[in-house]
Image (cartoon, rainbow, N blue to C red):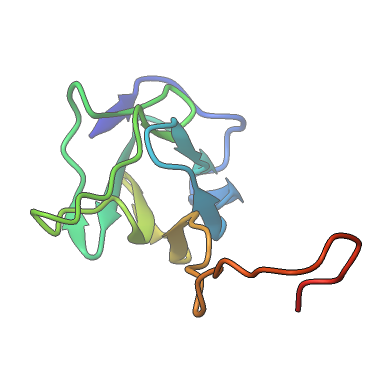
Length: 130
């Protein structure tokens, strides 16, 4: 969770999103950033959730001062079924109330699998393989 000690981008008492997270396709082992910029009277705390569960901050993920979530190395492990893919949302809160963002769907970029594999063919010189 991140606490802002002073007003964030304005002096409004009610919270309002300036940027909400968007659907994105992430690349394995690369950083991923999801926006969550809020305006309102501080202090404002921002908490991120992945599939409804709070995202712990630490060596794997952090919340930047503007509320953006940074996942340092996007992962999806087949053997353990752990994945950073899924739905993310952010919750911003000050002493006036709480605001929850839209859900952003994060998918892993992948190449499609071949349905038919290439086969060796013999053709005459100058011929066409089909």
